[in-house]
Length: 318
Image 1 (cartoon, rainbow, N blue to C red):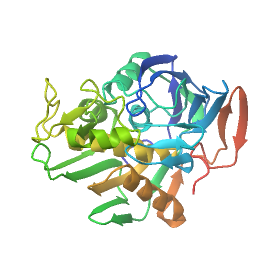
Image 2: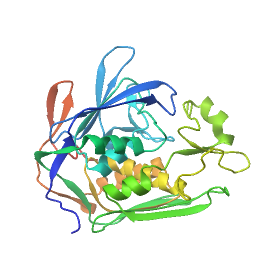
Image 3: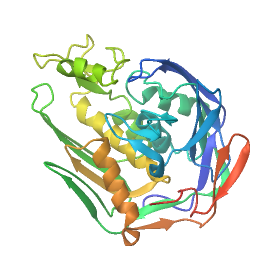
Image 4: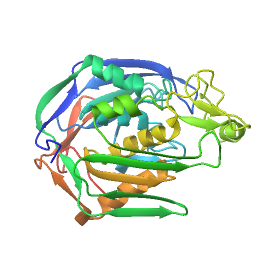
């Protein structure tokens, strides 16, 4: 196999801080990535502005609360953290297994609309190996979800691969496909800089629904009513749209709680479809297997470690 499944878990060498705004809330947010112990996984520690208390939300699909335009962990009507997919994609692709993500607001900062800033910061600070053995989830049997004209599937593959295709009735986008075996270098060079995108015709509807309030030309590719990209600098890639959809898929599937060995394919997908495919895989015990040591999972709980019964740090799977 091309991937060393017997490696060790990692965390960051040092703390990293980001400041920005939430693309949907429009509110300022400070986010810190803090090194964590082995077997902890990704834990979002969200400060509740009203109570002043912090609440921990594991970066795991069992805590996925909504998939409307972004992936939301926690309770959308209570304590939650929104737009986790870009950060999750960066953490997974850079090989960060354990980290505490502290936020003083309920949304990950959008930065420039991509994952590039996160990748640069992670590469600059570096990783450190831990004593805990890394656990992988290997796809053994194909699983597929159909949603009208859209579909997504996970199939066995010797490594980690993404094949994503989109098809928009818009001449600025049209039909695009991106396919590649995924590793840190491919993600950094070919995926991480692809920005989120949207249409001017949808702005008022999104604002009324509480979305895209923080969206600007500095953090989003915007297409006008004439189906033209209005960002002065243009596109970063000719097919930036499908590359960003691939970034989203990587982040959404990272919610499985461990590196995934398999090939993900989708046509006209999105956050909801991505999550449904992952849920279907994890609900069918014969469709996947753990590769690694069956060690207990722990997660931080404001200074108190709470042991949870699960294989490795992959969390209690549905």
